[in-house]
Image (cartoon, rainbow, N blue to C red; front, side, top):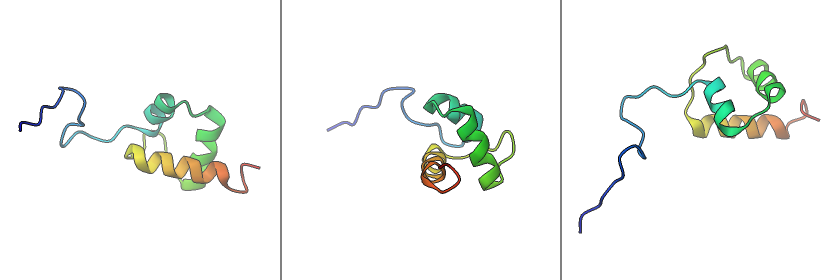
Length: 68
């Protein structure tokens, strides 16, 4: 059986991770939440992260005491 893959659905090997700003826009993260997470995690503008790491850290920050 041949496994067919649709072009453009798989991340390219060696492609850089997206910036946190790109991920925030893609995932609909509000500006204040991104800025708070940047300060909490020491992220600078243009920081590149895998989407899974970004999601996990944003969710953790939003559930933390600084968000309340």
